[in-house]
Image (tube, rainbow, N blue to C red):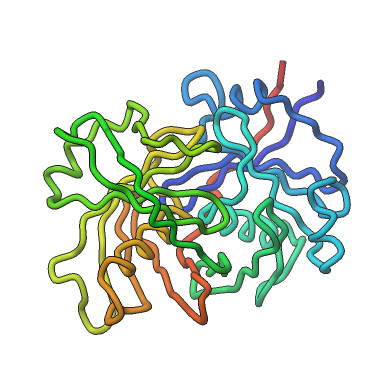
Length: 283
C-alpha cells in the first residue's frame, strides 16, 4: 500500500500514532497496528487513534445520529480495539483543532464507550467521561513485587479497571509491571489495573491527591492512563467515604492530571501535545 501519513501525539507520556482517515478507507489489521506501535521496529506508541467521521464507520452510527461528526477509533498496541482512552481523546481533540477539523470551545466525539464531550481547559482539554460504576465484587490482584495478593476495587468509566491500594511509595516503586498482574476471578474482558498510594495528607485545600502506576490491557505499563487516573481517584474517593472531596490531583510517571466528580459524572483534564508528523510504509 502507499505510504501512510501519520502524526505522533502524547498526553502525559501516554503516546499515540494518529491516522487521519475521514472517509473510513484505511483498514489496518491487528498486525499492522502492532507493527506501527512497536518501539523498536515501528514508530512506537501505546496505541493508535484513527480520526474518522462517525458516519463512515459502523461503530459510529449512534454518534452520527446524535450529531457527533468525529469518531475516535482507538486501538491498543497489540491491535485490539478498546472502548475508551482518556488521554487519547484529549490528543484526538488537539489533532482535530490543529488540523482545522473542529474548533474548541466544546465538541462531542464518538467512542466505543459512547459520545464524550470535550472542552477547552486552559492549555489542555477536559473530557466528560460520563457516569461511573463502582463494583465491590471481591477480586484479588497478584503482581510481581507484591509479597501477597491484594484486594482490588472494580471501577467502570466506559472501560473496566481494578484499583489496588498500596501502603507506601516504596511498594509502588518496587512493582515489576513488565509482568501481567493476575486477577482472581479474572474478568471476562480483562481490565486495566491501577496501583495507588494516597497522598500525605490525602486532602489539601479541598483537593485530594494520589500517586499511581498502571498496567493497561493490551499494552503493558504506560506512563499514564487517563481513564485509569479517573478510576484511581474514584476508588480512593469511595474508600475515603462521604467526606471525600470531588476534586483530585493524580500523579503518574508522565506528569499530573486532574479529576472532578460533578452530578454523578467523572471529568478528566490535562495536556495534549502533537510532537511530529511523517509517513510510514506498511507491509
